[in-house]
Length: 115
Image (cartoon, rainbow, N blue to C red):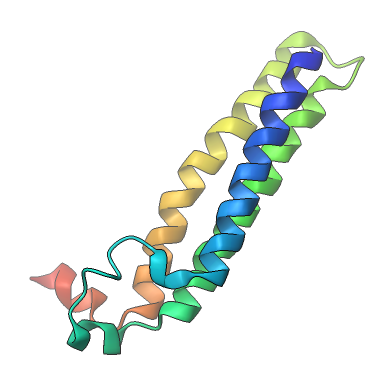
């Protein structure tokens, strides 16, 4: 089951790097450059970048848990379940982080949903 270690570690590194980039350069997040100047005044892009970065870093930590599936002595079925959960959970966590950042740090977000 040693083949489980490399994908888990690489995925965790990519998520952590993406989180670091989102925190350092939040203006590169999707949609911010397309906003009008008026809309940009309503969005706290620095705080949204930090929020997205926290979710991406958490996704990286969960992905790294997939490397624990390669411990000797674990039954094969349990190892595959741990690895599958560590691959699927971060994929579900990333849209939640994006939606939460929009909900929390964009003052006009709720008004757009009601239209």
